[in-house]
Length: 197
Image (cartoon, rainbow, N blue to C red; front, side, top):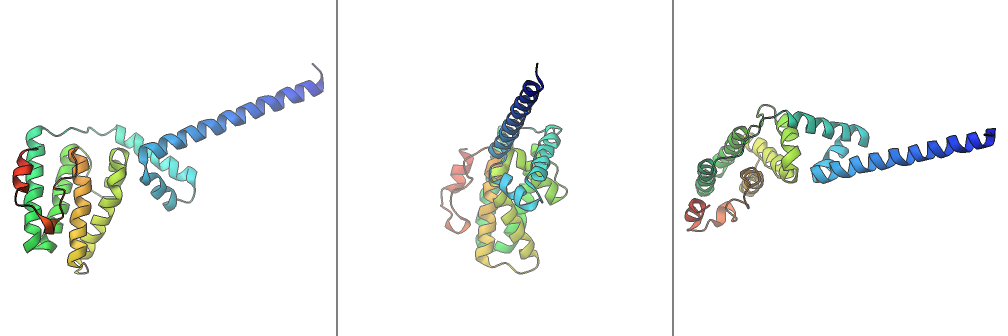
């Protein structure tokens, strides 16, 4: 083989290796985007680089794989659905207290499913692997809950918090949205609907 042929062969090998590397990175990125949905963009926006964000998301998947998640038994699902309906009824008379109760109910459900419930950031990280599409709702609800604890949330904010909590709550239950009405628009037959789930 002549020196020119060797150089051309090495260049072709390097080019093929580069194309393969780009394809692998693109496939991994596509898989992360598909798995994490809007959470992918959220993490990319928070980090200094896309590669750092993707490392974080892969780390979340690794930590998630170590969890011992459990599905809810039918009676537990019914109990949670009923508790949610009761919470929505209470909203009319005491919206500020109800948002705190919604946060507690969602946290209990998260724990019963087997997710850690300590630090909110850790909760988000663990939930993002299977529930990424409802995390923006959870973040918004949590933010309103914190503003409510400082006395800075309006009644409309509180109503929105309950709607946001409901999105994650329904996702964790594996249901269609629980109580498809807003807290102020409760139907008289909603309690019956909850028992039929």
